[in-house]
Amino acid sequence: MTWRWRYENANGGEVTDRPLPREVFPSQADAESWIGENWRDLLEAGVEQVALLDEDRVEYAGLSLRPE
Image 1: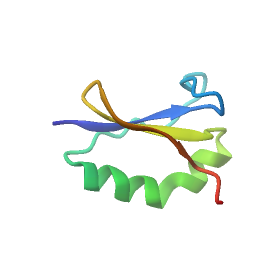
Image 2: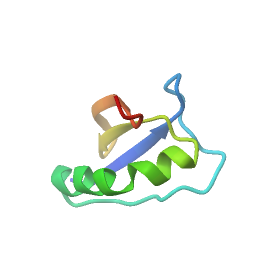
Image 3: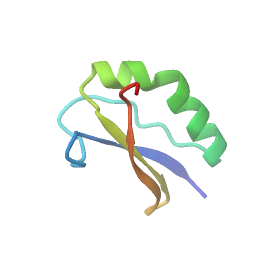
Image 4: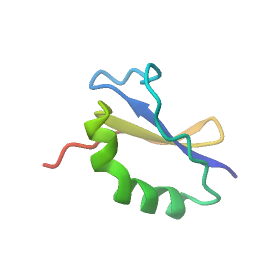
């Protein structure tokens, strides 16, 4: 399994027009730990929400990076 984050705008469209980290993780837990450490930088770069993918399968989507 290969886990990665898809970076999205507020409408759920993939953000591809800027340089963003393209990390790949061996586990879901590693990916979730990474997003917990890096969400502020991603938000500053214009990412509003993320989706977690296992290969091409979406584990979950629409995870907002904005604090509630």
